[in-house]
Length: 179
Image (cartoon, rainbow, N blue to C red; front, side, top):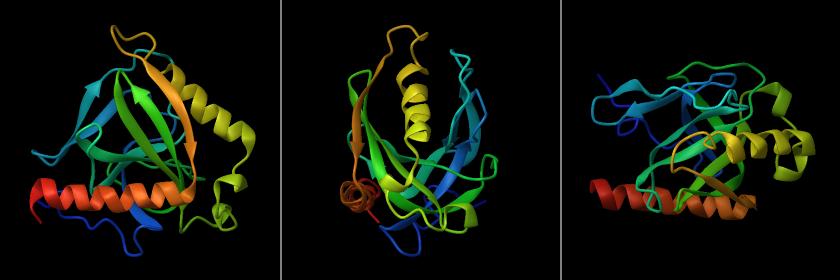
């Protein structure tokens, strides 16, 4: 069995387009995480808050976030709801920078390359203000009912920042896993 984190490439046109492996589909409540050692999707926790994910949430293969010592997270707007394990070719638009209980936790943000609803979306400014507020609301509140956990949003970063984050994440992956 192939490992979706270690065996799937980061993408075809990196860093501007990356693959993301969906863990938590839009509309879902439980926190599913891909277990990199076992190569399976596992329930990390039941949701503490009655808030559904407003985006497809997952990780970028072979991309490591050294700040939180985990795979690089990605969030993607899609016109269709996906399923855990689906791979999306995502056009990178920006990045949501967060403080998650004392750790910097970045979410690379984008839209599917192959979704005609988002063909004209090339930059963060192409995303509606209300959609951005929905994403911010979710990430500001989804851990509030958890004991000793908090999230502070530090703001959105532009495409160049996000592209550099992906490049650094690929380098961090190679260093950590000696590829």
